[in-house]
Length: 371
Image 1 (cartoon, helix red, strand yellow):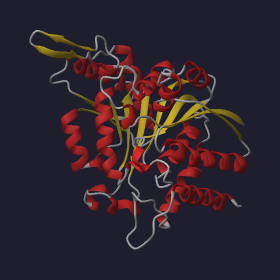
Image 2: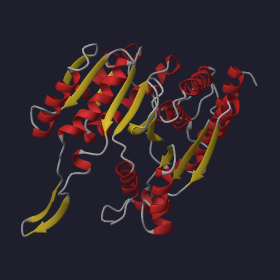
Image 3: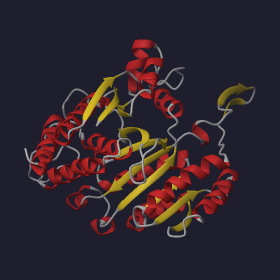
């Protein structure tokens, strides 16, 4: 099969980790008989410097013509002026909106060999395997009005949190379908005791969940969820929540895995066809970590989150679950062998470079499939 992949390396360490993910996809293509056609474009800070905009029209056009998008990271101190009219994050938000990517999936799985890589007690982390689904195109990040102004009494600002019944229903349905494929438990997170938008969210979520009697469903306030993610994370299976809550909770959950360098993500649009079990969704795939500009160019960053994002690309946008699983097994194998980057060190063993970690994953794929 042939697939066209838009590659947006972005800023900071983005190009370095993206390069390893592309190498892994090329290896998968060779071993399984697929062709991946890669086309690069600019986004974020690099695009601002070159074009004056964080999302050039040609970048969005390329993405729309592709089967999936593989993204590195955007941003850095160079573009951090809060008064700037153009910021790298606008490119990311523009991609989500322009491509209709409404569901962000962030899996958090704690590998047994990394139980000691976090500040959380190992006994609390055993069995943690969560997917957080964050609604991406509504809520505070896109609501209008969103502005600031100056009055005689000082500066003021406003942001607007808006959700429609349809937006809530479609993201909760994604959660129910995914829970069906896992341990059949869905937790919907809101702030219904305070926010009108959350009371609508809870009402619609309950209605959608009633269509899935085989899925155990619960509502949970966001502050309670934040606490329970640390106290009893293994009790969660699939979590679905709105845009800002999901942004915060997924960064909190990343602590469970020991390093952001281990955590991938997928931002998905509607199903694009296929038989049951082979449905494909257009998606954008990226590690959840930032651009880490202070580390750029040092061949030091952990590429595993980006490589695992490539595995999610194969699973959701290419309908290639066996190929996705091959990458995931390879990542687990190299970590189990003690191959570690600086952020997940094993006591007494040297750490490896970005490229060396990519080499190790590729070697593990080839070994498992026969060189």
